[in-house]
Image (tube, rainbow, N blue to C red; front, side, top):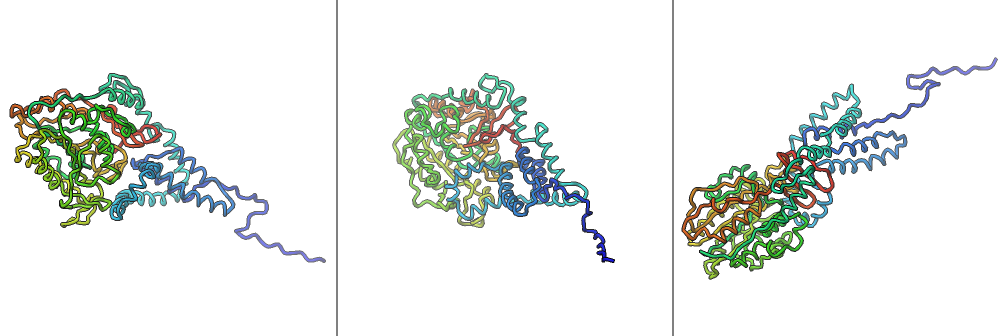
Length: 542
């Protein structure tokens, strides 16, 4: 007899002898939470989800890979790709835009960089994601979360109006159809409406005649970072400076949300609104405001409460034909430091120094360009209880001080017996409150809350009749130019009294179009449409 080996019974973990190897299945695993979080943020309108790109990324992640080293390699590549895709889905500026501004960012102080970083922390969003994660964990006990995430992405990709690109369908059909205001042209797409706008603006210009009658000064006070929305946020929209104005523009579009482009647009106010790219090309002689005023009989003056070095601002102003010597600031108080630690001088003191200089000047007429950055993001007070606090926390105090200084300057002009037309024109807002598509302080998209600014006109040395005139039409720089040109032609001082309404009649209306490098916002009907680079148009939903 020969021995027989005893068969070992199969354990519970041994596969059946006739079983086939398990077939790897598609699965997202932990990546499901990444896509579910994006769907949640998109549902709340906090990001603009690119569904097709996310579906492609999900497919690459779900492909089964048996080799451990290849799985690790895919994970190492997927993490930066996921971050890049999330950035692409967000409403943050394109990375190319950030790279182009790296030189400016390098000049920011550590305190300001920390303040900016803190603005990205939104505790409500963090709480939303935390609750979503807990609910997903609970649902995952009986649902395949990966399948739910992919189904959500498919819905976003297939249903019109859910994908951010599909929003342009609304814009191109319903919103853009009709006659474009001020052009008489019929547009069927946002691109056609925009082309009609710029074509109409290219034909606009405001002629200035030779000054006559009572001599007076034209004083432009160009204020950085003050919009109507900002003033409402800090309850300063009824400040005495605004209440005592002769003319107030309530829907004036500064058309830019950065200082350089805004300065160019004001200093080229006699001509219609050009495209952003055209701002850095030479302008026609009739478009340069200060040379035009100089030819009309006004000597140029230039003053700032800063040195104009950042972003080469002073040189930019000079290229617009403002050639007067810069008012010296030595010895004036420095209540603030900028985000790059540069000194920011007191507005009241700077304007008082200019007025003292003007009192000694024998020129019958002058045109002053004054630029102030007292409200700029990143500024820090150097003394007092708010010293060292972030710029958002001190905005209300700084804005009240600036408005008081401007009001005091107008009073000083009157006390000195000057005749002057004072024009307060903010460059843009501070984006103090932010919205769902831009955090507070970010002004990459020139939205209505950022570029709708409180422009006021105050005539010093003559009595206004009829009270303050409120201009509620959509206006921009051509309207302001026409008003100033009318005052040059018919000075409001000749009779000792004037009617502000005589100068605001038939001011040109300008449809809302505001622009930065790489992005543009335009109003069509009741919607504001945003275009970022080569992306499709989308409805801006603050």
